[in-house]
Length: 191
Ligand code: TYD
Image 1 (cartoon, rainbow, N blue to C red):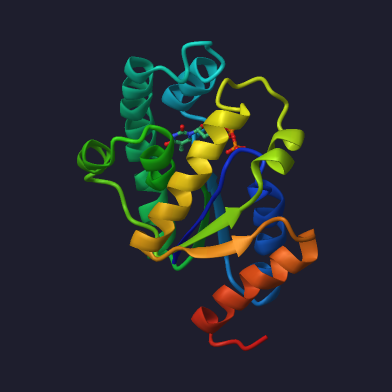
Image 2 (cartoon, protein in one colour):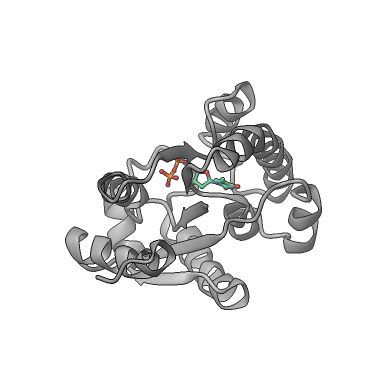
């Protein structure tokens, strides 16, 4: 099973992924955590580019979209192998991030044609003000106007693609509980 957590920068994905990993292991699952951008050479280049002041410009975004798709295509081999050995893959972001951040939906879908669609996508939805307080401000995506736009695009996409939307303004344990409530039935559990 391929589970993806999505959300604006600072939405608390990493913390929730840690809590989710522990719970899944406690219920006897084997878990693999992946993260985009990855640690591949392409992923390292992407992280460097995200710090550029041009990061929110259109041409730069198109270049990033191609690099993200390449990085993700490399990652798919690992995801495929983990899936065939019955592991639960939890991914910090997936191609949906490209759809909202790079925002050229049809083209993004084309260049990600060979990429797997997650079985379950959970969107951690958070007020941008709270999110910004948690960011280190190093990336140029981490500004209020940009993040507001991203948050809205996430919510629009959530309707089209049937994401599970979780209110990430709540405390950590409540958010974790809400995530478990979404996933429990998939493992035949009831919480
Ligand atoms: P990262 O430091 O990992 O942020 P976070 O912890 O919030 O995930 O940087 C990832 C950044 O890359 C984040 O700002 C979102 C952006 N991104 C895209 O623009 N497109 C993509 O396809 C992906 C996967 C990430």
